[in-house]
Length: 442
Image: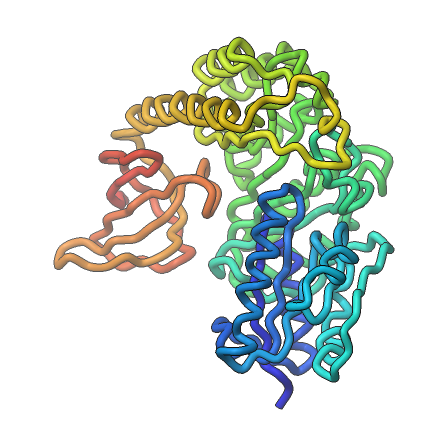
């Protein structure tokens, strides 16, 4: 019997897909996966390195996992992913707790890395081939939901972002490969496909000479068994009228788009090297409102040059163009990015004040939207079972404007039994913070 492997996955949903491919590679290589680190012979930490906070979390997690060498079966700890890709030598030289460090393009070699490490080798594995990670996977999501990573890398070179220096230039997965992956996932019971990349709207430009996201979603929607297609990380300047029309008209594409705006002030957007401006974003949001397409976004607070006036401008935008969900993050000054050298750096406590202020504004917006939902009927997907009170079965699910784990939930009461992955119509009866409560109707 080969060794038992425990895997900790950190970071974004794109990193999660890499972890799932790595898990499948390990199982194919004869290794057993265990969810409990104290039972693992080898613990792999698949890392993020996008921000200083993510790097700190990765290092702290690796040190925590190394404690199982004393208190458990663990013999070796291996770091993989973005931290190994960008900072592999520093981690390898500076962390004696770690027995091997591998970059973000070594997942296909993971069995060899584990074997060599177990045999006593201590090595840095860091291929710079900028390949693509795809293949069969062991899902870490609910079995009815899966992420489909359609590209890797980024060409946008926003002045605050390390991603192009970690993941390289934008590279699309060939369309036929994505369709093959999708068919395999559906055959295994997946009903909701969540498309992800650093920039999903740019899909296909490198391979086919023009964006092919619309063509991809059209072909995915023709696969029997696919019921929801969800689009994350859509850049505003790439959301054409044709793509918006397709989202509105295609019954399998949920009426929800994740659009990372980062700001609305023209000067800040220009300094961020974003391709859109406030006027074009407002025009885009007006179109989406008219088509009843819900939006989630993310914003950076405290970017160099941020003032109380630019924050107020963002508050006004959030109130005028209400979004179902929004995340606000304090700007992180990352060495190696252009923005790290900008004048007008904002103090840490001021950045946190801006984050809190904007979250309070968004909370009021979400509260208003949720109150307006009471009495409406939404199609929901069931994620999990919560219990039975003698009259109603309780479930947790989501509407089409809720992405798993990052948005709210619908707490569903049903007189009949449901299963995870079922779709049902739910009349909303009340709400609590970002969550909705409702009852199944025929």
